[in-house]
Length: 149
Length: 166
Image (cartoon, rainbow over all chains, first blue to last red; front, side, top):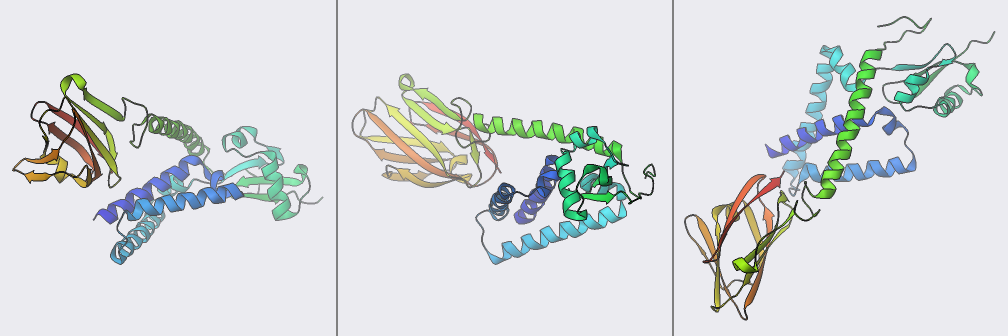
């Protein structure tokens, strides 16, 4: 029982903490973020297993975590609103060539991030070539270029 | 569902987004508060004297206890007892039931001469020399929650409460 409770607590906690830190946190994976992620993984592992390194404990934990994940995905499918709350929704950052500064500030995205995505995804050189820039649920920025006239 | 962007089919909810931003900012403050309280010692594992590192009793009372108010489940902890004005060559320390039921006594320094267990207590007997005796108990909490320990050396009884974090 203890293992299941540990698993559930850590699952919910991680979900909350990553939602609170904001989606950009995970996507902007610099070298440092990568290290941070490794440390979080290591810390979590100890909190999950405690001092019990038995096979049973490990198996129960894996089943608990995957079960929770499946359960949650079923709930999200059934209640769309829940999914929106847990995962968020995409957000338009640039509307018809115009930057929406307030949204960018709140979402902690700047022009450079948009330009970076524009170069990476579309090979664009300048901001005025972009029609829409959208911050997706997973923290990625997608770009829709202006049509050539 | 909005269609305000020409040609762009996207489900956006700016209300939800702004609520999320507000909650995120509250969350950041909560995270900061957690870190500050951890530095002060409210979550155990060191910290400022008086919050986590406790000292009760003293020379005037014949016995001093040093302990941590906040412990962590299955994490090593120490409990230090100093007896002053020691006369008899044998010293007894009696702990209430919680001490051995909820804590695992990993090691006692110095090694006690005798350990006896009664219905609601456990008694350690130590050989002593000089007029001051100091004992250290290395412990490991066995269950989370509140912990009440009464320590009695025959002359003075001190009751203290500790909290074990899960």
